[in-house]
Amino acid sequence: MDNIYRTTFEDLELPTPTRTGMDTIDFSEMIDDCIDNIIQYEGTRIGGSGGSIVMAICPECCGNSCADADYENGEDSCNGSYNFDCDQGEMSNASWISLYKYESFQNALKARMAERTVVRT
Image (cartoon, rainbow, N blue to C red):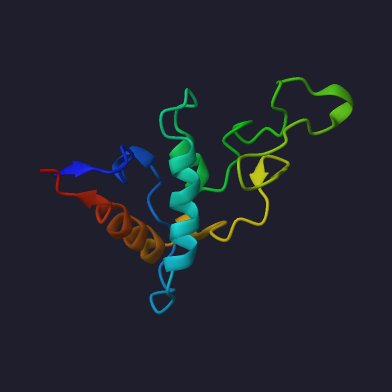
């Protein structure tokens, strides 16, 4: 079996979950949105973008809100990623913001990413 996409859950290098609970929530829509954004950065030169996206950190500025690394007048210069604007280094309005801290979300994300395989003949 070949992976449809190259990024695996282990590639994300997420921190160990610090919270439990939320076991009854269906994360399907949030996980699919998150994975769709991870896919947009596969093959780019932005290393670690998958993990940043799961943590809702803007992959374009790596969370510092200045894409050009220039803090001119204290203004944000990052325009954000493909589907989300950057709000002081965070992907604004991402449905999965802060969910990476929950064990149940990480387990659901891992299971969904493992499903992305296809048998090639």
